[in-house]
Length: 193
Image 1 (cartoon, rainbow, N blue to C red):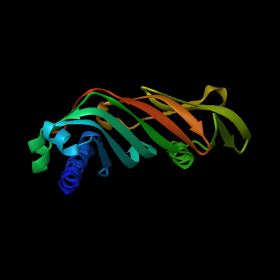
Image 2: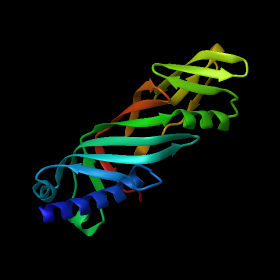
Image 3: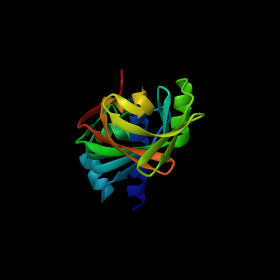
Image 4: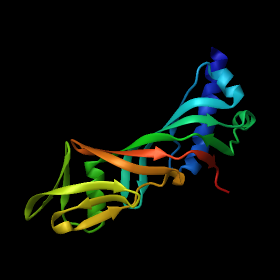
């Protein structure tokens, strides 16, 4: 059991370092590998899944407080992991969530020169200004996150590309935050040259 935990910790650390550059993150993410028994899966170079958690993921003016990605069925070269020099990881796909806090959305709006405030409450967005409060809209698609206010006035914010493997496809508005849902495309994650 001790060897299993030691190698798992080593692998999680090596993968986290690789994913920092591949997913274009500023900070090294936390990585949790889910395979049991781990040593057998590790020496085969195949893991059932891994979860990557990163905080304060920024793209342009917008910051996501937290991003959690689950990568399904990953393969890698065992020797690369043991040497701490992982060049590529293959994934069969995955999904994830990004947490957008109301304060971060409002900071992005201010940075765009917009003198209004978005208030997020379950299922709705209110746009508040000195003139009052009106219902707004929050949408996510391949172009980014769009905030629409009265009269169709809107602003679109770039979302993190996360190495170009992620597509944001839906969102859920809660009290003071929005959860952005994403899909992770299958393929190779490679360290940029």
